[in-house]
Length: 98
Image (tube, rainbow, N blue to C red; front, side, top):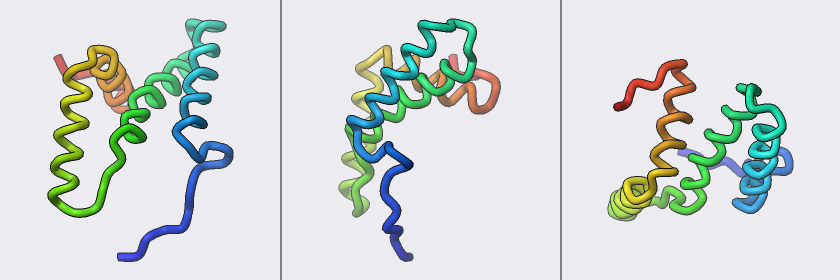
């Protein structure tokens, strides 16, 4: 399997860039609380900040350890749980987790 040399998306190349986008999306939500696009962008971006905190490593043992760290991080944070619930529920147009 080959790997890609593609890095980033437009000006989003680092975790700091993604955090800047999160702040921008938050301001969009504050300026128009009924903007569903801004809310979608905010919650999806917020939840995926976890990917920068715990990037997926190579090797099965490292991946298992990473999965456990991600799970512990999410379990220990009600804010991450809410972001996960909204980000994952909204893409299916229905939140189904209790």
